[in-house]
Image 1 (cartoon, rainbow over the protein chains, first blue to last red):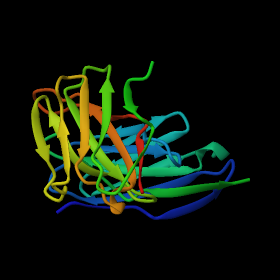
Image 2: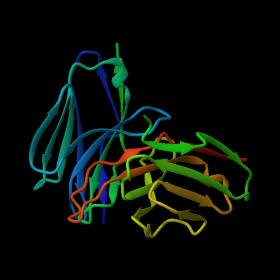
Image 3: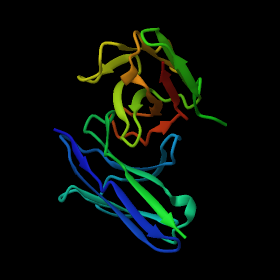
Length: 110
Length: 116
């Protein structure tokens, strides 16, 4: 079966660092993606991991451990505009199917 | 500059009245997806096209159909909308190579469907 877990909600303070975790159990694996979604808008791509390790993109970093079925998204120097839902998605072996986690709603407080 | 376009952004229909949502893309991607997303939930894949090959998710109701007349366009037809079909409908595209390595998905802005 396909199962992806993320915390439902998180709160952090402007300027701080926050880590959003994602664990997955899927029948296949061909990459893990993180998306940001503001309320009422479409998801936008943030980062992609297919090999173990850390990928850094400015204020955002994503880590993957395939043996543990685990990833995290790290957001540094939080800004108010980072308040959004963050979706973890796994692409399966066939490369076409993306399975989404439930999303983590992040609230950044002043 | 819009790459994945969905029209309309908001659609109101009546219970049981057929409705069609449209999606077009300028990326020339070979895979197109339709997702249903309800409030505070993850996007749920309804079906996708790999080129002309249609792939239906097992739990997608028969009430939902799709057409892809060419590479650029894809339509979602809801034959008899129920109140439970009110949701955001997201279209996405991706480019898949022969080995299936591919890239990320690109999402359109979504169509919010309201059923009265």
